[in-house]
Length: 193
Ligand code: SF4
Image (cartoon, rainbow, N blue to C red):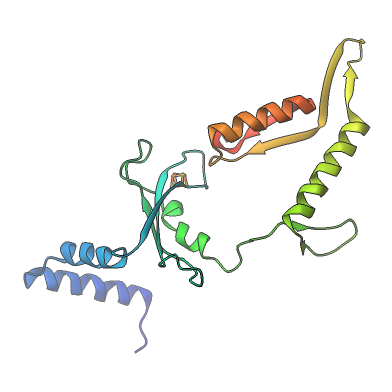
């Protein structure tokens, strides 16, 4: 049957009203269908990575943790015990399952080499070696020891660092310590944006 989106919504609303008139409690049915969906899942608490609010989430994963089983994320919801959002999520956070399960999600580091027109997958070891080598060269080439009036400053203005809202306090502590030890002055975090 061909139907428009508007007609589909009308039918849905009409069906809901009819069910209510006939005495069916749809709220209970909706709640029950959600319970069935997460009945056998593993719950993992995490933080929504999208914006600075950093809402708490619960990720429901299906899979018995056997070696040959790939766990599937079947539902993501707001964490009712989280002090920031108390179980609520905005539409963006509510769609997190699509982000986690997206076939276009990057699972490996990638590099686009000078002059190349495409990105290529590399190993984590190669990525970490490459980043370390570039930072060393940049620092050797551009480290500023004194300002225009000869006052010592010892800073690295050619490198900036930005963290994310899901970074832990411990990670941020290490990031600030290591960046400051290199002389980096431009430090920012997405959680402040
Ligand atoms: S659920 Fe929405 S408001 Fe909360 S952190 Fe995610 S994007 Fe931000």
